[in-house]
Image 1 (cartoon, one colour):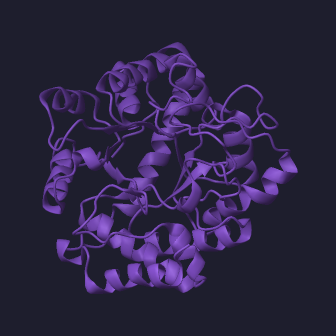
Image 2 (tube, helix red, strand yellow):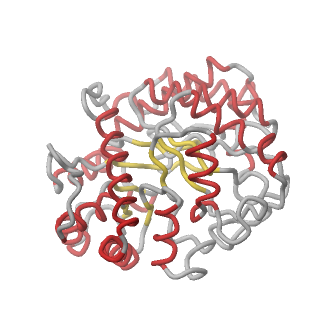
Length: 368
């Protein structure tokens, strides 16, 4: 099977461009416009949100249908944000998990690993392959409107230990984990969904506070890392991490030696959308070694991104090389987790007594 052959045909460029997109859907079932685009572009993955959820059986069937629209040699990676606490797209009868701060407060790494494993099992039962968890940010700014109790701790080393345990549990259960938001969203005072946050810290301080949880996640074998739409002027005075070669290629790839998949945060977030032309966003992010781009809702933006990723390859050999590298890493992720994956768990694992007991322990011992 040669899905990443180094060729220059229009068909190959279209295929690569599609493979570099994780796209969202408008509702609980596919509409005709979405079906048509999926058949043409063959996106690399999908992400579902609460707007796409009626009940667990419907979610599992929707994920099955999404896979059925794509060739068997290009299975999509189906994704969800299922962190627990404020960020949980599928609720009861799935286990309603507490915030990860409460899990961290329990102070038992074996317990954190068990929570990661249980979350991974439930996510797989729903038909997903990848969970955008854990949050590897350090809750170091009490004015932060978006992280807070999503982080395991306000202490870098405590956060690092729990991030590694969670990753080990989730990926041990066969679910792809994602450490986010690199190099850190915990010290921001604004929400990147609404504006571009700026973190004014010197590199030694960044290395002391923000980096340890990500380093720990990498040492635990985390398969994917999500970028932060956050500006770190001492690392790159012009561009946020998502678009910064200094931060992604220089720090994450070279210094921390991350060989896996880098996924952008959502292209629809106001930290980036409208601040730079889409072509510049995608070009600079690709040059920074972003492999895959999230476009979570707007089909118009998805189509524009796909067409732009095709055009960039046509215009610049370096962009084509970046696309080839990105698709190689995405396919390696498939081979690592989808080939020979354990059987998909039955929906009966959702909210099972063992998982409810795990969730209750954090509420009893770790509630902040």
